Image (cartoon, rainbow, N blue to C red; front, side):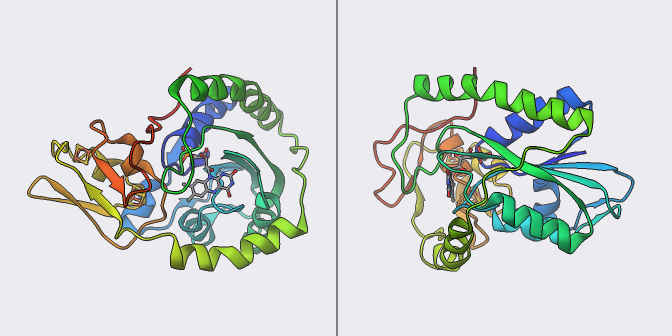
Length: 249
Ligand SMILES: Cc1cc2nc3c(=O)[nH]c(=O)nc-3n(C[C@H](O)[C@H](O)[C@H](O)COP(=O)(O)O)c2cc1C
Ligand code: SF4
Ligand code: SF4
């Protein structure tokens, strides 16, 4: 079973490619996150968790969902992450999850994919992003082949400093950066509801054809990047920046 979390599609893209190679089924964690039910995969011998890196670790709602879900004891667990610059401390966090959940840790690896954090970072052009996605394919396929053979990943470099940076900065990040107060829509909004549909946490509701943000957000940047009219802004920091519309090759 390939279980993924995604904001703007990079991790779904990787998950789909891996599942194509391994012949596994795909599961979108948003189905569980939206209604708050834990996952239950007690018959699966192999689990592949695919997600983006947020602040050098796994997205908090995804990690919490894994921790309260049920899996077969000693099932093999692989972690494949997508990130814009560094894999951070993903290995250490993933290993800890496996220890606590009685899963057999098979390693963590990942690949550079386009930056989607439009709220705080510069965004690349469509052509630059297309090249990044094209380049990522080789590493995604290699990971898929290793999983298919049932072998462990050559584990990613594990810097203890990354682990402590992630541990210390995550609470600050959640408190001071992850807020929805700055999201707003411009007159370009056509009330199509796509922002509400793509939110993996079900944090957006449509009222009189206008999106309204709740307070259950993880800053995945799906709503702001995937709006077909580019009608969502985050304060002034997203003004004039190109949106990232998800992977294409
Ligand atoms: C809230 C947030 C935090 C991020 N933190 C990091 C990070 O610490 N390191 C990094 O290399 N990329 C970081 N990124 C970039 C994403 O990991 C990257 O764009 C990822 O491929 C997005 O995947 P998705 O399309 O599946 O959501 C961050 C993005 C967001 C939205
Ligand atoms: S996706 Fe964009 S256009 Fe559609 S409802 Fe949301 S903000 Fe409006
Ligand atoms: S509200 Fe927007 S940024 Fe927050 S989790 Fe939902 S889609 Fe992602």
